[in-house]
Image (tube, rainbow, N blue to C red; front, side):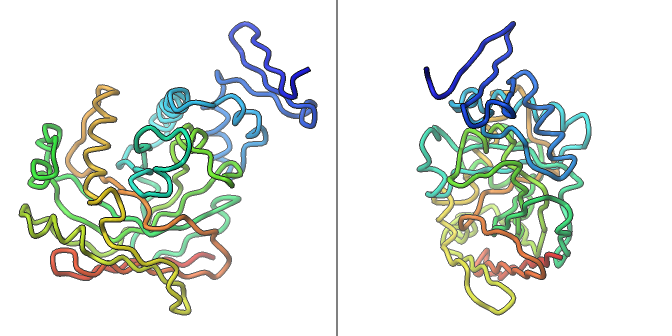
Length: 291
C-alpha cells in the first residue's frame, strides 16, 4: 500500500500517512479557514504536513492564496502587496514559475523603531526588504520600469517580520504562496521621494543594503540589484498578478519588493537595523526590536 493515502470523498481531499493517520486530515475546501484561524490565534497549522501533501503545484497554491486573501479582505483593509522570488534564493526553489505575490493589510504596518511583540506569533522571522508607494492610478498602464517611475511616490527602508504558520525548513514554495507569503508585521523606515529619471532608477541597482544586529554584526550585505536586477521590478510583478485577478493598484498602495537575505529567526531582546546607502544620493535606515 502507498505510504500516503489520498481519498476523494464528495469533493473533499483527505490525506494521511501511516505515522500521522490518527491526527492528519485536511481538505482544500477548508484550507483558507484553517490558515486564517491559525494566523488569528497566532499559532501554527496542526495539520500542515497533510496540506503540504495536497498543495503540490503553483497553480493550486495560487488558488489557495486567493481564497485566503478573500477571507482576510473581509477582516482587514488592504494596504499593499509583497513579492517573493525576485531574489535568487527563492527564484531557484523547485516549482517557482514566476515571482510569488501576497497581500498585506493596514494593521501589519508599524513605524520605524517599533518593538515587535514576541507574543504576536508562535514563530517570527525577520528580513531586510524595500518598500515602494504608489502615487497615482497611471501605474496600472505601465509595462516597463521607465513607464512606472513617474507613477511611484516614495521608496522606504523596510524590515518585514513574517510569521510562518508551518515548518518551512526546507522552504516549500507551494505552502508559502498558498499561505499568502506569511505576513505579520512590516516596519516602515526612512523614505526618499522617487525621482522619475534614469539616475534614480540606476541608484536602486547600485545602492548597498546592509542588515546588522544589535552588536553591529553584519548579517547580510547586498547590492540593490540583488532583487531582480532592480527592486522596482516588484511593481511590474504585482501589476501582472492583479491583472490576472481583474484588480488594480491604487494611490497609496505599498509594495514590498522582497528580501535581501534569507529570513532569520527572531529571538528575545533582538535588535536589527537595515541601512540603504545610495538611493537617489540618500542613506535610509530602519530598525526594530523584538520583545
